[in-house]
Length: 166
Ligand SMILES: [Zn+2]
Image 1: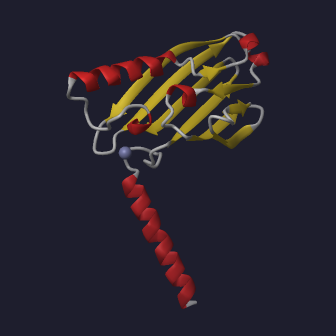
Image 2: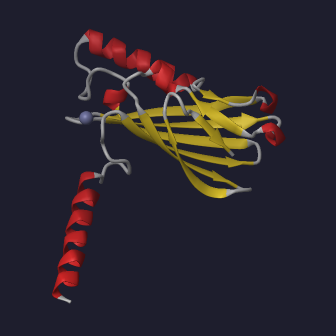
């Protein structure tokens, strides 16, 4: 009985520490890893990427030098393109809005949101995530996918296994 209680107490302590560490971002800050939440409903696909900045640029604090400002601007432009999300051509998906927000710090994070509209949602069988090609420091994405037909599921994406099926 006493042992059980101890285990429960440790569990609570660990949880509290994690919650504190992650308060500014839902995803844990681990270089090389990112999270992606995809929701597809009818003709709309929304994707939200959360990641340490270090996966995309060579620093995490606020850009100060011109070189850092240039590097950040280049990354931001590439991010807003959203062309690393590749849908079946027949689905005719186009990026509507994209937003990129950086939270600079000792360990800065980035959150980017993308709204796609697809002309032929019947052909929307899934999507490929080709972020790994553009940002080689990114090794793994924990993806969560919600679709009307299949509900919620999870997928681990890498450069070699970059396809999400809806
Ligand atoms: Zn960091």
